[in-house]
Length: 202
Ligand code: HEM
Image 1 (cartoon, rainbow, N blue to C red):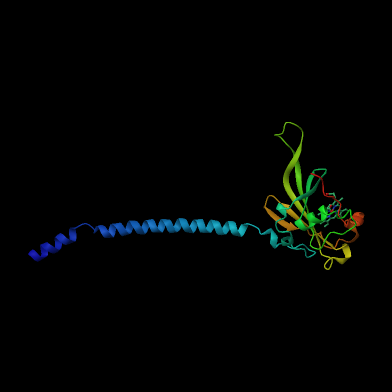
Image 2: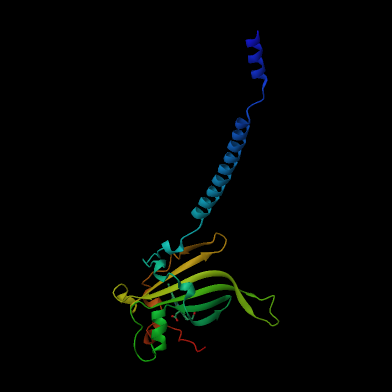
């Protein structure tokens, strides 16, 4: 009898504290794991969605990656046409040549020179105290690179255009922009090594 009582008392005792504690810890661990998994899924989705524009190659075989960092290159000049604002930048090698007097000194730009024309759709500023057009949506990147071995038929310059679509935040190579664009490209300024813009005083 006494043996039976002892057993019964034992079976009515509450769950040991150790067991309660571990269940709570397991739940917390599961919640942390789920949150971490959700963050990982979001990061992977963003990474998959984000475009590496420098992986693009034009139909004429010009790699956008040749112009890596163009956003930080010094300005050469600017231009304005209808609804488009343009800024022209060049790589340090070409800037150095400009400063040394090319093309006015009769010398061509050196191999490896690169020049880029950035184009924005423009809008009227609603903030300035006077009428002024300012950049709105970014539209296009025009690129030229000097490599006489690759582009012998166009004065040593290769040409390409990369279009930007703001809605999808993606660049695409312009299907019509061939690296060797024959007589259509810049022959009017052949005497200036095919470059329209002089380096502007600042
Ligand atoms: C894929 C084709 C083309 C590319 C990649 C291209 C690229 C460029 C670049 C980088 C500039 C600024 C540097 C410079 O002064 O030369 C420029 C300027 C210029 N290009 Fe071209 N070009 C292309 C075709 C043409 C064609 C076909 C014409 C005319 C028939 C033209 C006319 C001009 C003019 C007038 C400028 C100076 C004014 C401006 O900024 O618009 N381009 N181009």
